[in-house]
Amino acid sequence: EAGVTQFPSHSVIEKGQTVTLRCDPISGHDNLYWYRRVMGKEIKFLLHFVKESKQDESGMPNNRFLAERTGGTYSTLKVQPAELEDSGVYFCATSGLAGGADTQYFGPGTRLTVL
Amino acid sequence: QQQVKQSPQSLIVQKGGIPIINCAYENTAFDYFPWYQQFPGKGPALLIAIRPDVSEKKEGRFTISFNKSAKQFSLHIMDSQPGDSATYFCAASKMGGGKLIFGQGTELSVKP
Image 1 (cartoon, rainbow over the protein chains, first blue to last red):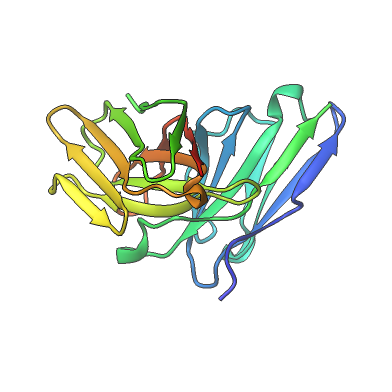
Image 2: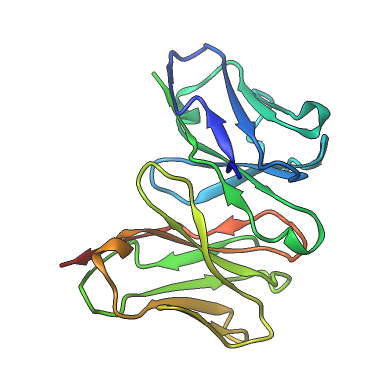
């Protein structure tokens, strides 16, 4: 069974440009999370979807970040306009419901560099 | 408080040594404590996890020790191998699929 996939693996953009990151979950996983790790610091939570609904978006840094999960399948995270401090590795993680909800499976991440 | 503090930031041991990584949390509502292992270019992968109703959990060469009163937990790697060289993250959350609050990570290097 395929794991969590993320696209692109790397993205280099200029300050002020727009970037869209994509996450494809493990089939059947209703919980989807976005996290970010900046410059060797801790991995920080951004937001949590249950199916297509935003369960918790308390970690979103500001309104330049927009996350969507249409149809409860894949998710996108758009940064518009990008700033220098948005550079980092963005991880997507997914988990099942009920008894399997605790184990989060992470994708390989998207390394975003804003110049 | 949502913070999880992890130490040390980096650790070098010889093959066969027993590296120990420590974490402390503040929020007593946390009831699920996983450790993740991350290799370069890969995403974090669940290594082992513990719930606060037990003080120790062992899986293979990996052991979590948990001290509920001190709000601390640690990872021990027995008979460490060069293949264990990776970044290790502790985390905490509320059971049932809540967000993970991560420590800062520990870069472990096991020398042959």
